Length: 98
Image 1 (cartoon, rainbow, N blue to C red):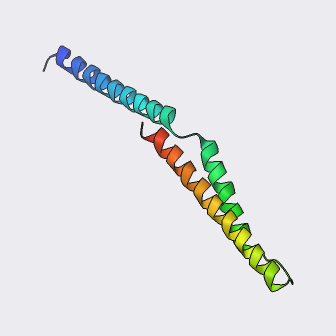
Image 2 (cartoon, helix red, strand yellow; image 1 turned 180 degrees about the vertical axis):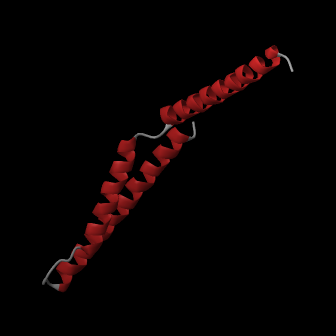
Image 3 (tube, one colour; image 1 turned 90 degrees about the vertical axis):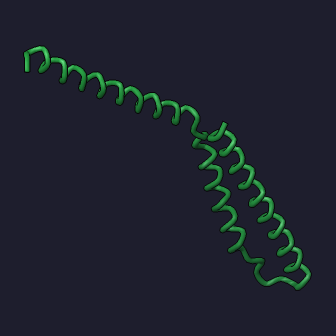
């Protein structure tokens, strides 16, 4: 082997490595640029906590009528929270899959 052949192989390997690193960096940048807003995750976590608190809530010692109204209101609130969480999930999918 000549001296030229020894110098070409490391140079070629360096070019291949540089191309690979550049491709990975561009791919990562595109992924970060199109990722959903992290505040959507925070909002979903807050709604998850809200739902848990609603499910754990109690009316206390009240009449049967008041208990029924309480259960109905809490049930509607939980349904609203579930709907909001579904809409957040749709928003995340819309951003992540343009």
